[in-house]
Image 1 (tube, rainbow, N blue to C red):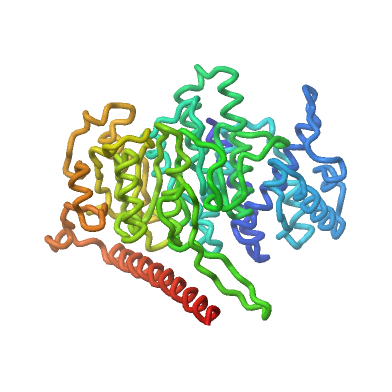
Image 2: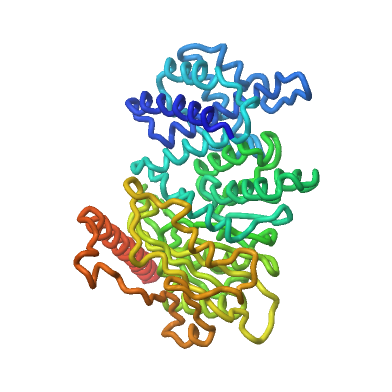
Length: 500
């Protein structure tokens, strides 16, 4: 991988973001505009190549029309391109659906087209270079707190460790039902290329690039970033079917089963829909999701994603999913789901994550690893291995970010690809039997045993800024819980008023 070229590209494109920010263009808006223009430039390069030229967009909506236009005519032509391509199907439609021009100054738009994108050969640049450059821009976008883009971004160190535990193969069918910008899908694809690339058959290569790896994303803007991200890494084709479905993954039963799910469903507890009344006022209504393949009916979005992912797996399929603490201890539907998961699936590993690693504040999360099994009377979960990576671990996004090596001890304890009977307990890694788990109140899987050193030894106290951040995180988590409860109570009282 040519990291010099990648960094040069990122720096070149990022510097211009600072110019546009003065015009009110957010980081994520800027990355969106880059997505449209990069696609048009790559399509133009494919149409002009001497070997097997390929026409992806109509001439009247092409890159060349942007080069030929000036001033207000340029802005008008750009809008026409975005509208026209947004009506197309497949990958084209996913990238341009509901696209809007956010760069109102034609001179700055022209410079972006001619100087920054036009002078690069994007089809000639190696897949790793242009893909890495785009990934880094997405990471920078996630740091823009005002845009809220960070909620779609899983720390790359965590993504890599989860993939290293799951060992994706060329024969897997892989999906992420809440794919954000596609981080898990790309990490799985790159793992396969790295470990199996030399032995891949032509059929396996075609399969991996054209349908074995797919995602679902609810938000149009995020889906377009995921589709472009995958395209730049060599997954999918510009004029082929979209590998990113733009819809609510929870809305219906899966169209197909897969062998591997990697996911970090969006934070936030309740599923809700926005309702606009005749007076123009909007409100949010709690939405309980009822599906024939679900074990319990609930408005808790996180619990519904657990059920959906369980349903997505084929027999012997495996999943690694980031989920908040409430999934481990919530009663009612939560208890029902945990009981079913322990009995009908092999819920074999739980990784308790530290705070301070997500862009969304106040998040206390875990990774659940489980496999789907054939029906039988006795429970499939024999032991749940819990790795406590939270107690006495402290990270921040800037000063002390999570790195892949921080998770190496967990991966070593996990023993990827080996018989779990060979696992050994350590200070942080313990096994709990099915009978122990079922006997716990409400089948509570929020299990801890390590002592917080800072509570016992004054010398172990954390720096004031870390303590302050942890207090903020705890308060934000509590506020999120109260907001979800208030939202639920509000919608129920509205329902009662309507019934009366």
